[in-house]
Image (cartoon, rainbow, N blue to C red; front, side, top):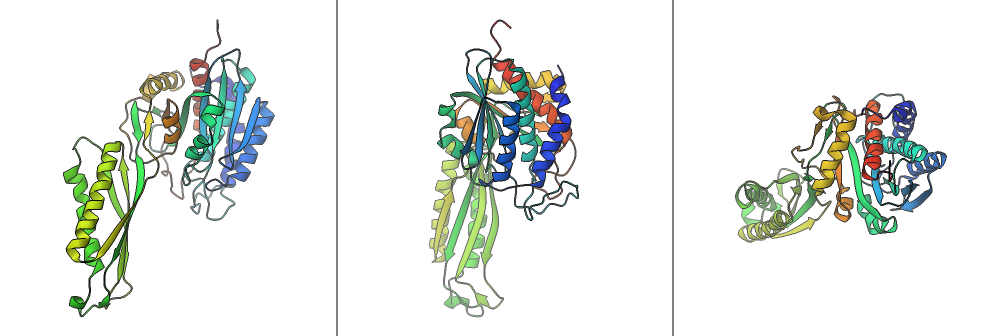
Amino acid sequence: MPVVNRIADLSDEMTAWRRHLHSIPELGLECHQTAAFVAERLREFGVDAIHEGIAKTGIVAIIEGQGEGPTIGLRADMDALPITEETGVDYASTHPGKMHACGHDGHTAMLLGAAKYLAETRNFAGRVALIFQPAEEFGGGGEVMVQEGIMEKFDVSQVYAIHNSPGRDFGSFNTTRGPIMAAADTFHIHITGVGGHAARPHDCVDPVVAACSIVQALQSIVSRNRHPMQSLVISTTQIHTGTTDNVIPETAYINGTVRTFDKEVQAMVVRRMEEIVAGQAASFGLEARLEFEFGYPPTINDAAKAGFAAEVAEEIAGAAAVDDAIMPVMGAEDFSYMLDARPGAYLMLGQGEGAGVHHPKYNFNDEIAPIGASFFARLVERAQPVAGA
């Protein structure tokens, strides 16, 4: 079964919706124009209920099927990034310094396309909960929506999401059973020494040398404290200190990210970072303080749900275009909070060649929207078939 015919007929509408959303990018929880546009379309489709103002600008819309049954959740993220657009398209961002550089405009359009089809056909049992989420990039909107009780209030039994993937074959689906994206944590190290004249280092306690030593020592966690078969990334991304060539500064600051899949590995990293920072501070005779911020948890697919989602994807794209055992990636995604709350799966949808996400020249490929919308629609129909159909 290829793209659903009715959804193929909606291609031009999905393109128009997506390009309008592309022109009005919004950040974090402040997706007011985007949410208003989504709610207006949902009212036009005749969905049964629209719940607004969740996580400030999030929406959950309900479509009732035929007869009793569970509720399946479908999620699309709505927020953009603080990037100045360089695509040159005629529907480019009208909000300076903001851009849909990750394709959330396309994710929203795909879910709207599925919503219109499902509201028209209702060829499923139970209910569909359409989850339009703000603040995926920053602010953890997925966590906020879960904390505000959407899974319990709407009795969601399973939940799914798609993300576009530049560089993967056009129309291909990619997922895996188990961890698919990593936890993303942040560390800050504040070093305080004694500043002074650079020609008299013996009168100072140099935080620059200590900072360099700490950064090198942190890499020993990956090479010497981690089991070789466990995934771990520790990247130092910022070192700030000093103002000029002839002054030893008083302070230094180190910042970076930690990516893990396993909670035990994560705990080991925190413990070893604390030990290294304290030990290096003592060895240099200065003060150093670690702040470790726990960010998005790992995105972990339910094995059975991921396998089922792959079967549905094969109906749409063909078996040769579906890979259900991809290598996990070390990026992060706050759909993780929804998968912590309910079983489900997260899939990548290839959009062919082009600039990668988070790049000022990135643009969502509108030609994959009918494929993604068809996947969502068939997922519902397969997961919750009408009795006797």
